[in-house]
Length: 139
Image (cartoon, rainbow, N blue to C red; front, side, top):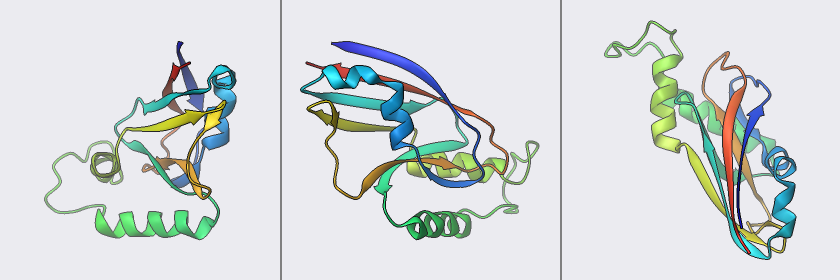
């Protein structure tokens, strides 16, 4: 079976946000699959997706703090600045983290580690709602 859907995520403030439940709710078809893959792709260049710690919220805060120090705003060598101080750093963070995640499916759900969840990494102060494409493949 192949299934694909587009989902509009609610706007979130800048930071790292768990969206695993939103993704699962958007694809009830996943329950039909015994084995397969789920690919989630974000249609933006100033936000990203990652798989990481889902239990302790301080991990998400530390990730935001680290990436803001690692990729600072207003670097004197940035040329792309007409969309705001947070835009070019957001593009760089997207390249570093990535635009998609692929997760194994087993018995109608994700077969990930106990402490793993999907992050929406919002790199803009006011990024707005984000669109993701979810593709399921399996049997």
